[in-house]
Length: 154
Figure: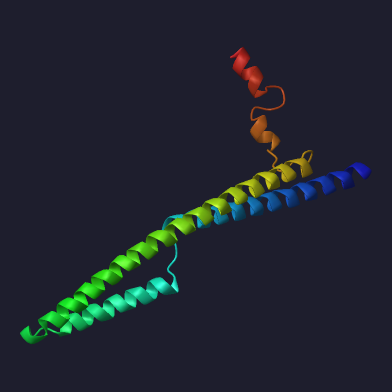
């Protein structure tokens, strides 16, 4: 009777272990991919959105001034829009570099946490069978003929 309850406890603990390990691994994968995506793409800031709006506004005003008498004013607005575009590109470049540095730091810290977590899981579930294979898969030809005997005896 004691063997039966110990076996049931071992199976239940293995089931919990498998679920816990699977959940942790999936969470780590999602977090890792999100950090990589953030590192590649970046995010739009309020300053960037504001500069884009100003550029659109200047270009719209310049295109509305199509009369020969307003040509100088339209050219001035276009030059201002080009200057804003350069400012936007410089801002994006600096923001991208800052984001890249911080994401690399986060990725390094995340990698260390991931390794530490995996080591803790291995130590915690060292003797617990996390996954089992049925005997029919291991010995498909019955108890008298193991796969190793079939290979060697041919």
